[in-house]
Length: 170
Image 1 (cartoon, rainbow, N blue to C red):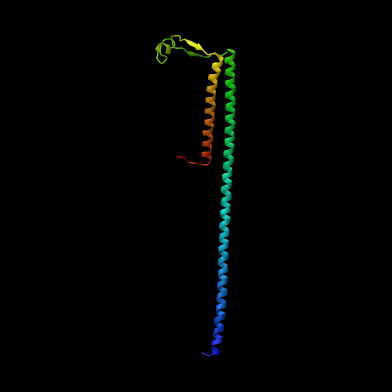
Image 2: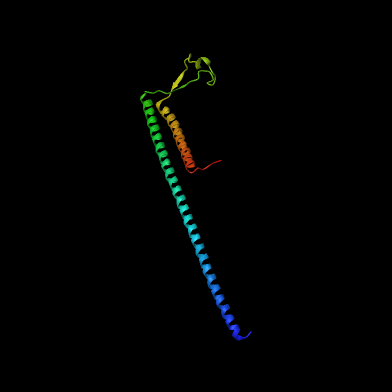
């Protein structure tokens, strides 16, 4: 091969290589653009799903918060009502409108069952409590009732949250 035949062939091959390289670059650019569009679409969809999930959780939190506030208000009302009743009872005990007494065993074991006494045919001996003792016993019972109300409110709050968030416990 002579230099005069080799140069045009080299020029053609060089032009073909440049054209191929340019074409390959265009296809690469198109592929990269498509991948970027797909990634952007996926990122947008993920952001949308995240925003929707966040909105659902916030809605659930607001609903649970409102339910808990209602339960707290209900507990406060129950406690206020119970205190009012307890105060009224103590006032009645102090004034003598209500008298408290306990049975007194008269020579028999208090655990012995007497069918006639159970039927109400026999009068049992009773000891009247003084107002201070009655108030102390009522305070103990009232504290227990308050604790029971508070524990029930905690159980209700727990169940509200469990049901709001659809938590299954085992």
